[in-house]
Amino acid sequence: MTGAAASTGVRPAFERRAARAEALARESPSARAPLEFAAGLYRAQGLVAEAIERAAARVGLAGDPARDLGPLAAELRGVLRFAADHAPQPLADLARARLDEDPGPRLAAWWSGGGSGRDDYLARALLRPYAEVLAARALRPQRPGASGGCPFCGGAPWIAARRAAGDGDSAQRFLGCALCASEWPLGRIRCPTCGEESPDKLAAFQSDRHPAVRIEACTTCHTYVKSIDLTVDARAIPEIDDLLSLAMDVWAGEQGYARVEPGLAGI
Image (cartoon, rainbow, N blue to C red):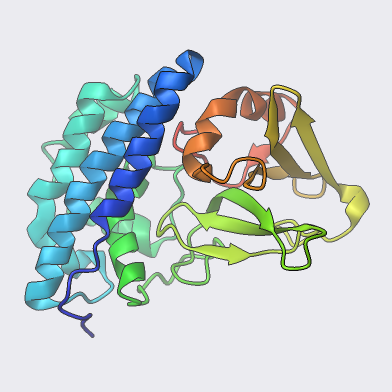
C-alpha cells in the first residue's frame, strides 16, 4: 500500500512548534532549558519528516518502519546527534551510545510492541516524524501491539486540550497523541487509561501559578493526564506549553499518580 506522491508538508508543523518553544523560552527563564531543547528537537525531527516525505514521493510508504525507514538511517541519526549534544544526562549518554548502531531493529520492535516514551524516549522521538507523515497521508500504520488510545496509530495521549464547545457553556476535552500528533475527543468525566467514569474517582487539581493547566487524575488506576485550557490562551500549543508547568507533574508524582505518557521533558 502506498501513499500519494505529493508532499504532505509535515516539516512546517515541526517548525511552528519550534518557534512556539523559542518564544516561550524568551518569556520564561525558569523553563528555558527544556523549551530550548524542545525547539532543537523539533527542528531535527522536521528534517527527518522532510526526508521521509521525499522517500514517500519516490517509492511510497508501507506503514511499517522496518521497510520504510531502512534507507533513512543517516537522517534518523541526526535526531540522535542532537540529543547527544544537547539533551540532559543520562539521555545524552544514551543517544551517544546509539549513534553507532543500526536504528532499524530497535525502532521496529518499539513500534510493533506498542512502546511508550517511558520505556524509550529516543525511540518515540525518532519515530514521531514517521508517524506524523503517515497521519498526514491518511496511511494507517501497522502496529499490532499498540493500545494507547489514538484512533489512528494506537499511541498514548501525552497531553489534553480543552476547547470551547459549540453550546458556549462548557469546554470539550481532546487528547493529543504523543506519536502521530492526532487529536481525538474524550468526555471530561472519563479516565483515558482505565475508562473510569465515576465523578468521585476523577479528581482535578490546579495551581494559581498556572491557571490554564489542570492535572486530571484517576484514583482507580492512579494515572493522570495534564490538560491545557485553550480558552485562556488560544496561542498555546499544549505539548509545548506543558513545559511551563513541570512542577505540577512533580507534585502529581509525589501524590502517587503516574502520567499516562511522559511529555517532552520525559515526565
